[in-house]
Image (cartoon, rainbow, N blue to C red; front, side, top):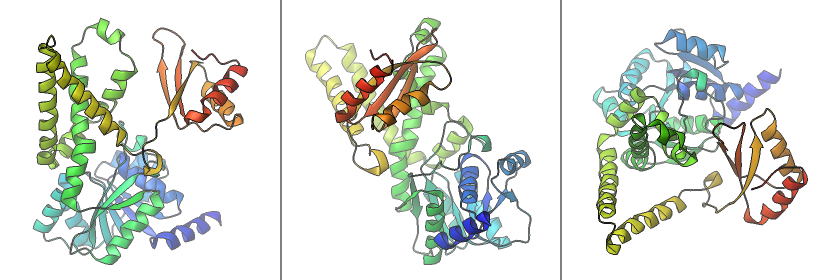
Length: 369
């Protein structure tokens, strides 16, 4: 009875009762899991039978068989494959409406037009969420909570197709952002695609670095290179699909880096080092523009550092003290001490909460440096 109530509620909220997810990787399976939590009937399709089987075992839905018709088909494949899948699905009339989740929008739209797809029932979309890991095993039902989800209607897109995607976004917990396709691609080049390449370039220096250097690695290099662990095959497809906007950004980054390198070689000249300082200031200004929680303005949080043992339950104990003190932990970062069974937890809190949290932690026996 509870599942039936969930299904009815999900359908009322979105107008969607059944969805086909084509492509059971990280994003596709996460969409499916989110929809299943809302009681939506979900079917799964993928050329990789093993991926479908794993997604099904995770509770993401049931395997698709021909002959059904669903409300919405979600195409979760690389950008270069979206239009071909769309054409096949539309020819088989498997859904009333169609969308995709590729991180590039101009390319699939142009290819869909070239293939004479029905653009009235198709609306391009892109949830800006992901993880370094890939595949259905990395999927999470909460992956899209509070995350922007771009929708890129064209002049041909029907209002009903737009409503179908808005319903999907709401069911998955995302925040809908309407944007024109070419503007979307220029934007993700700045905030996603070029940063990935830059992180890979820094991480590549580590491949041949001496063991001494790696032994000195701290949280800073981990922060800068974290996203470089993404699947190279997947990212090659993304970058080639958005090649020119990404190249434009990378050329500007490369120019900044070349100028800094030249200034450092002339570091005896104070004016040259002024150019280095100027770039660092621009970096701070750019960081300050990144939105904060829930998409609001960025906040300057204070940090309370706590020494924490590498044992089960330590973080839970830490958060319990914060709860009892009435302090909300806005963010947390862990840094392990090399060779020791302990590390430091950096707790980001509102500045006015530092004294209360510090006192509560010390009272419960925690060591604050």
